[in-house]
Length: 407
Image (cartoon, rainbow, N blue to C red; front, side, top):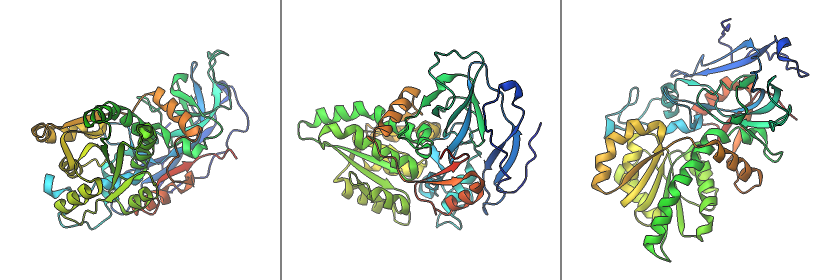
């Protein structure tokens, strides 16, 4: 049965199930929201419709979605960025001669609009919820029971999370949540936070080598480029991970947006430099060098553009390494590999991370070892307004859609 789509922000919520029904009697409908790429006016991008509640897989589970992080994916790979991060997709005339719809002298619309138009869909890969039913062939020793609070690892083929119910065919993709983690925080963990953790782990061996080379009093300089939830998670996880180096790792955040600059400055363990696109490249590079007290040893660049990576390499010292997301590696690495080789620099691609890392991340956040970045929770019915606010940079930190209240 094809969904009957309408142009309204949301339809009336279907009655949530009040009790657990066997799969054979589950014939009700549930709400699903589709957030598609907005046009220049950000209209008619959110659709709500009713779909059948999915049957419980024999060896899996059905999850009642409580919260889903507002995230998007590029056309070929799962998302690792929050919507509020896509404003980094700005014009880059000095490298690529500009982008469609954006002139070399400025924009007539928000950079966030351009980033959103480049995304295909917003499928909702960051999901936290409650185990509503277990499959008929799931044994009593599976480790899960109805009512467990869980977060979903974003595996290949992960289901659309903007729905009241989703299913997982294997329980191995679920991670239990401690009571100390609110559902809204849990919904931020499976993509942005997980990518940040994997990137920190990938950089660890390089940090150790640099510290050994510089001697007992040497300092490894780390530059994080980006804004939004991804960069905010990055600086928190990096600060925690390298805390054992006794202040021998200096962390600087290059913020791509005003709001990111403010949020990063509130975190006292890092230096902050603002990459204001109104300035010339030479000025931005000099500003960064001043903030970092010279060239840096490692760059973690979540900026997603050629312009951002080009600037990062200019700030990186000879023999340094820059980490970029796997999502953009195929597009950016061929353009800069020769330039990096000439300066004996390396460009490394980093993927999403493992479910074991997600489990560790859940443990650290649950124990209060890592503080989550700011976020705001919105009812799923307000998805249309949320997208508009994100495009206008009116929401600081992450935006979380709530489908069901557990309070």
